[in-house]
Length: 251
Image (cartoon, rainbow, N blue to C red; front, side):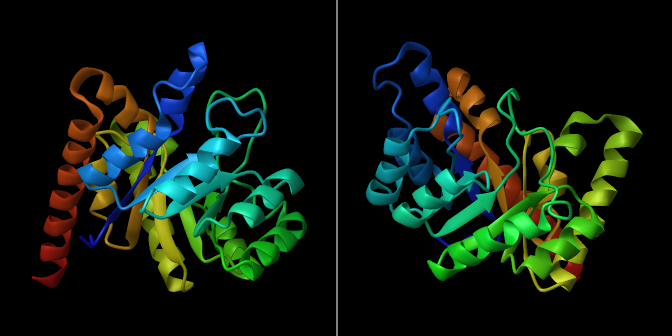
């Protein structure tokens, strides 16, 4: 089924649980299969420098054994570039990475790293891989993404999810303006980070956004109700919000 708004399920933290004790269980590739059955449109996995969750073997298996497209999140390093070129996933999302961070703490500073990022994007494009930049909802970062030739901008939704009350509304307004800017520059707009059942609706209602990438929350909810159930519920909330937004726009 083709969805108006795609859902990419990040299975990193299935691997985190596996790695807590070693061995093979739970298997992130099995989680990816369940995600496909539950309505996901793609699988996202972040191969980190320290291999704290997803492993090199996981990436090869996800590429070879799963029918859904793989979105490989990675830092712009020579090691990760070599892995991407050898594996050739359909999509790569370049993200910032700090060894000490528990999770991605902010968007990629594409403006400051313009010269460093350009050759990586060129090499990935040369291998037929679509490139996304994970950035904060900032006009300068979006303009640089366009100048670098990125195919996609993924907007960092973490500050919106963490905020409350009026601050959350302000962060949502920033995301809306950024999404319009992404489309105005001819790029595809994605969004993700920290999204939950409570926060996904307003983001899904942004008709400029074509894909959401969600992981940690879904894996956490799976403890209580199962992975398929959590993904199906997220899919339903997304689809409802998008349908209502599209109906209002066409009315």
